[in-house]
Structures are given as C-alpha cells and as structure tokens.
Length: 294
Image 1 (cartoon, rainbow, N blue to C red):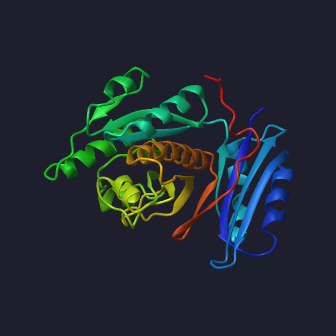
Image 2: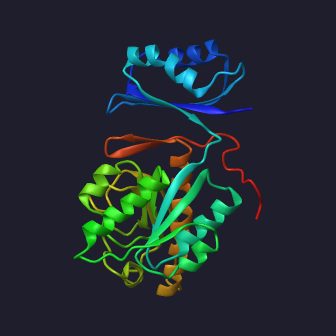
C-alpha cells in the first residue's frame, strides 16, 4: 500500500491541525505519524503528516483538493510519495570518507535517495564510483575557469534531474549565483571547530589546544560560507592521550554519520527552513530500515 506525507508551513493560528486532519479523513486517508511545531519567536507553524490512502486517493487528487484549505491559512505545502527516492548528485574532492559511506548506505537502501552522478575536481574516486555503476564527472576547477566549471556542474544537476546536491568534503567554495539558484538544495559537511580553527589542518590545531570534543556540522549552503541553516550535528570525546592522527580518524567517522543523517532528514521531508535555522522533525517508524543488510 502507498504511503504519503504532507508538509506544511504557515503563520501560526488555531484550526490548522483540525483542517489538515479533517481533510485527510474526508479523502479516506489514515494518519500514521504526525509532528508539528509552533515557533513562538517567528510566529510560524510547521507540520509533517504521514498517512496511508485507504480508498485510492492519489497525490494529484489530494494536492488539487487541498488548495482551498491551504489558501485559507496561507500555507506553503507539498504532498510527497514516501516510497519515491530523491535524486542526488554528490560532489567530492580528495577526502573520500563521506563519499564511501554514502555509496554503501545507498547500495543497501539505508537512505531514501538515488545517487545519479558524482562530480569531482580530482580523479581519485573515479574507479570506485564507476564500479557502483554511477556516472562520474571530472571537472577541474581553477580561478580562471570557475564560471565555466560551475556551469558544467549545473548542467549535470539539471540533466540528471537531481533534487539535491551533497558536498561530501568538496573543497571548493561555490559562487553566490550557484548558492542562490540551489537555495535549500545543497547540503555541506564540515568539522565543528569553526570559527576557532580554520585552514587546512584544523584537527592539528585542535590537538595543540587540548580540545576535548570533536564534532561535525551538516547544513544548507548559503552565500555565508559555512554559516547556513544547520540540519544535524554530533560530537565525540577525545583525551590528552590521543594523537592528532586519532583526531582526524575520529573526525572522519563523525562527519560521515552526521552527513548521512542530514541527507536522510532532507530526503524524508523532515527539514523545514525557519529563517536562519531549521525545524527538523523525528523520523517516522520504519524510515531507517534498509532494503538489505549488506
């Protein structure tokens, strides 16, 4: 049986939940999970509802019939088929831990995505990507050719029908134009030492300062470098007895896990932009299950 979800954002007022649940019931739909949040600071309301259409309602029919209720409350809304996988383009440079983790999770069906292409400014991971039967695109990026390189990248995104771009340790700063065009559709991952430790070797800097926590942050990309709305974060403890190399290895693991969780939340339609921050609802039961174990 099909399983759909509805995402809603609007100004907060009474009657919204009743209107949504009443509409779905009238259409023969049974709600299986629901999350909602009223932001007292922004006055915004957010809701995600999972449901099963028990009398044959289609997404198209549900979408057209919901227009009246949506207009009454000024909603921004969208119906989604939870069985449909989101098309994703992954971009990577020379650090491959996040890419390899995503390829494994994609292969076993642990993420609700379909990786339709990998773009890199290096050739290091061409073989591993091609061995997964995924198109690999090598696009060299320099100061001189950056506009042309980004145009080529955008053509791949558009031609593949990708709905999301994942920067899996892609070490190039995207232009303001690309950030604007892809607003809310590019996810990045980096260590959480910023703004304290910048540069090429932040883990060594952290080691020298005796840091006791290593973390990672995944966020939407904006024109403000590494300051977009945060989707997911995590940390791991370290001690004085560990080496800078230990820091790097532990950091790789945290980065991989945080990026995967951020992608899952976005592809599962659980993330709502709320100004400079996000609302991230918990996963519905069963949404983390894999198609196969290995």
